Length: 404
Image 1 (cartoon, rainbow, N blue to C red):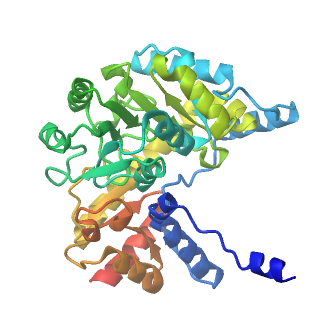
Image 2 (spheres, helix red, strand yellow):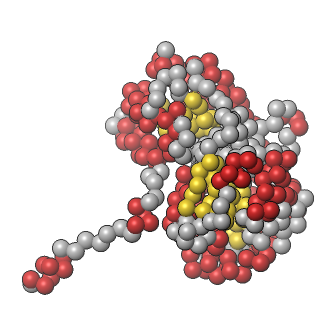
């Protein structure tokens, strides 16, 4: 009995690398918001980057048919061959880029793609350059493989990516990657083709891999809506250099967040190794969800998704104008995704305390800038316009009362 007692006193200790992972503050905000709702409060959710529209019914029907048809076994680790071919067709038809399906790996969401990319590309001690602010999980994926994320603040407020001069200054022999996003979370900023080509050329010259997060592609908002083609006008980084890596997902534009299907495009030379890693990391993405995703590119589904993009554009226009009128600053032009990254310098100098006040006292849930980096993080909060117009209007009313 004494041996058993001594053994029961042992408590495992988390690995050092696990303690390097920052909390995902938006999820803390969401959890508290739900607690307040359970207690009877009315909360306007502007915190989570998740479309409020249900998955298009045609996609749901395809998923149900896959289940009823017995499509519940594993697919190959790199994904359903028909889905990989369909994604390749998307790059050819929409972007004018030839991508062999063998370069495409279907993953459990974009998160699975980023975990796969981190393990594929990085050694312990390597450095990855990233913008500040940027999606917080990216730097955590890098830390978990023993590498380091170096955050580069904007050369001027509103810039969507680091300048070439900043990249030159940050470069050293440990730098192995440049990770960017367009449209970006949390700013909604987009990198246009000329700048993207320059960034791609810089990476190639320095022999640094470029990984572009394109999960919000399709959700971009041209100044002239009539000039906007279906699934957006933004270029893919693959058009700049076929050796670039691209992460995408069916979550945002296609509205399939909970289905957990994304993809990673890798250079041909890395495809076989990436496939082996996928076998070991996650075996395969969910099979019924992959069959459902096959339906996502069809014209009748795209018609539904384009109506939703127009709704997001209207929300963007309303919320950005309202925030400016209240006194927020908006240095980043929200040209894509569904976010406004707003400066609170007129009201507060602690974004986490500011967000707590809005949630606890006024029923508006937003995300503090400290979730997204270090540079001036306490001066910003992120608003997600993923609630319907009546709820956005209510949020604005509450913000006005809180801040007047």
